Length: 135
Image (tube, rainbow, N blue to C red; front, side, top):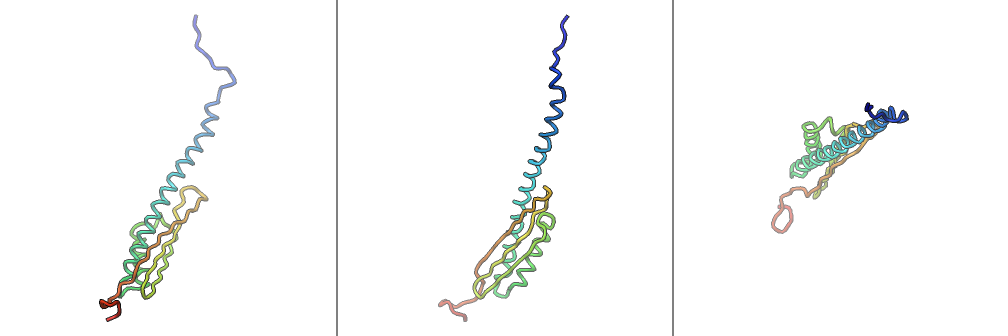
């Protein structure tokens, strides 16, 4: 008569112990992948808002207020949940405009708070004569 093979008694329950240890680590790794993918996406949202604000701020009749308005409009359209607590700073001189958008990424992993930013700068549009002076 042939009897089935039996594992030694010392190994019973080993798989359950391994699952208890491995599954949380795998879930944490998956959540970290999602968290960093959201950070990448939030960085793109911040950069888009900065470029949109720059386009408005650098116009000849534009200014800081127009840049702020365009940045807020772009942020509202794209990512109020992914990019949280955004702040927009627009600086404009006679020749240069610079916009910076900062914010935090939505938390997927508790306690991991990532920040992102987008920056854009460019020359202010102005009408000049061929010699470079104001007409």
